[in-house]
Image (cartoon, rainbow, N blue to C red; front, side):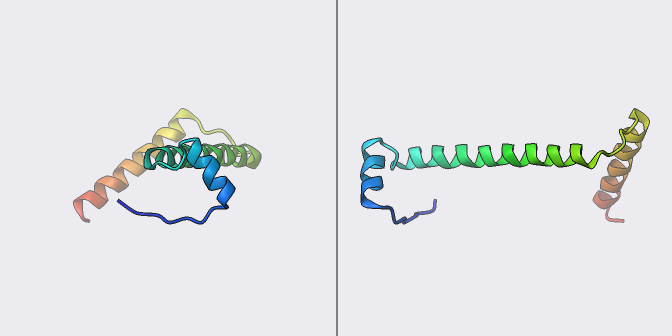
Length: 81
């Protein structure tokens, strides 16, 4: 468990306290929701970049080849060779 100390303007701290937002569980919820939102934004941003790159579509055979290559590499790493 980590303890945080933050500096807030007095009026904001009072409003947040009255709204019940300064409890550990409320702050945890706020942080988790914010992090989830950022992850979603990053995902959509990456998707937009992929779309803008206008890469050629892969066939199912090409996809399977890539999957097989990754599996073979993982198997090789796991065996230590």
